[in-house]
Image 1: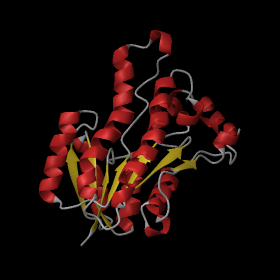
Image 2: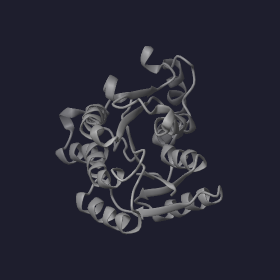
Image 3: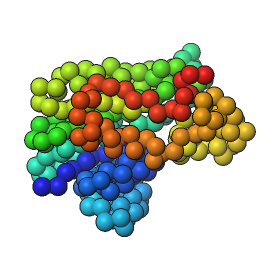
Length: 249
């Protein structure tokens, strides 16, 4: 029986690179996202690599949408071997004094609620796997609290660290390993606005990284590929920093 990896927010960026890495290592891929056009392009790219892929359209921040999405997934799949909770994002910037509650709720839903909703729904399917694993995404912002206006983003990512360890404790009896990756500054569309409007600032970020360059999405995907493999069989509850030494400076 094929191994199956589900990746939320997997139609672009690190999520799509992870889908490519896992697909090439033998997984069938389930992608989730909210943009059908982007999904069509992602599916085409994966299929060109002879990777079997399926797509389910639903909003990971909406509890009812997640429940409905997993009802459709369960109707088609008997089990999932890997869940990668990749969906998330900055959501914008706001200082706390001016922050509207709706903005706070949006960022927390995108980065924290989404992981809870999808993990909870995936657990029954993961229990049916012989080698189940969950990988979450925290961030260097979860350690340094993020830049100006990104404080609530950093807060949501810090919560993922604790949620990852809590899930690892909760699911160990079922053999489900739970780990997280914590990327630093990775050259993706996440930083596209700054790269387009202030290239000098974008380039200056390299000076705060020990290796003097930004990370590439493939470098995060490669770590995830390791974490879900049997080579990482004794790792659970761990947070893997992928930042080129950025947290040293």
